[in-house]
Image (cartoon, rainbow, N blue to C red; front, side, top):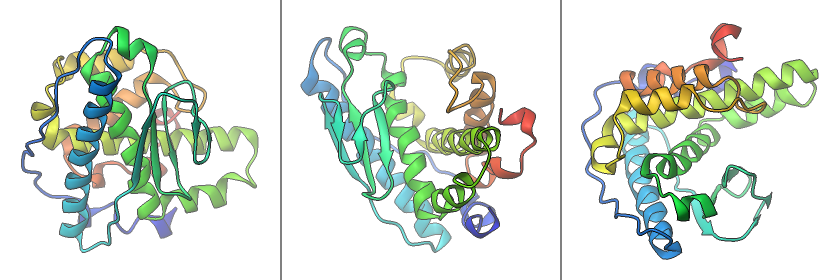
Length: 224
């Protein structure tokens, strides 16, 4: 992954100033308010990453963001998590889920945007293309590890974003409690062990810079 690492080290490190994001409240059972929440989160993430790329002297372009109640997107069916990134179309697709209507936990819903924006950052700096080139000729076991490295880096990028914006998001949960919740979640074949997802998200949050997010050279025990 060396060719994709130029924007992941010192160039995108440094102090992160708090960013104020106007994220609206969510009304129980309201699709409209959930859509407004996601769009406000998207605007916040866009400002944050545009500023980080500009500070590093790197080109940045905003993704398209689609918020829907359906199951289709520009690049296929929306998965069970309710969100995915379409790299060829540079589009983040978020599905409003029934459980979010019944129990609108702000941090969990906010994370849909933060994580998928991490994949957009990976696309812009060449990580997705580099990972794809390694993925297709690899064995099943190697593919699983590559998938975990990709997803955990996106988690770390989300943590970097939270390092500047968490307070204004109004997550409704303390950071330590949130990380404990991530650590205790169900394991995903694509994403890897929850304890490692929690580790990388917390590492990005505490480090405040993408230079802390190089999952590609981390030992297997940190990315399985």
